[in-house]
Image 1 (spheres, rainbow, N blue to C red):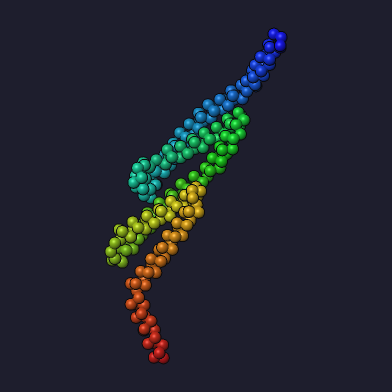
Image 2 (tube, rainbow, N blue to C red; image 1 turned 180 degrees about the horizontal axis):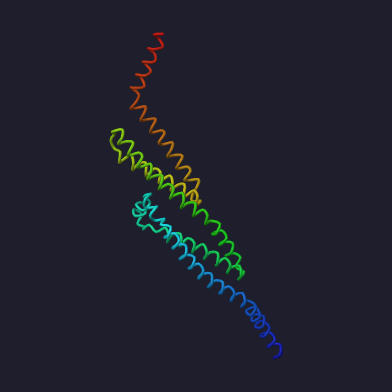
Length: 227
């Protein structure tokens, strides 16, 4: 092979590679610009939404509903503005990265990010489910305690706490189902738990109320036979 042919063999691949790099540079520069601008906008949106939520005094309302006590038990501090701001921030970051992956032609990453974006509504719905469960649990706990104390019965605190935990646990399981986490298993657990309560109630009534039930049956027989 002549020196000219050797030079061509080396130059052609280098030329092709250089043309590919040159052709890719506009996409790379555009993707970097979109990424930088998008991250700045995401930070601004987070600060804006956090300020709006704080101005609306959502934390004050949640404290009145008793949500802060549950979060403190879990080791978290109530800050709805920070939570909403973070949610908006990461949502916009995913959108920006999706745009960057489309510009660069990373179609596998784009598909994954599309799935993440489609999953965001489930996260919001799960949060709302847990919030509603906490509000309902606090309301029912006070209602049960007041009703038991009004009837001059014992264990009002225990029954109120039991009601609270029952509602919170069902809300947590409903949130997991909304998130798509082991939905079939959770539904089986809920069904089994309800069946267990029904069976326990039936056994308790059968053992504790059998004498009274026999008395009622006897009274009914005496009444029918006398007529």
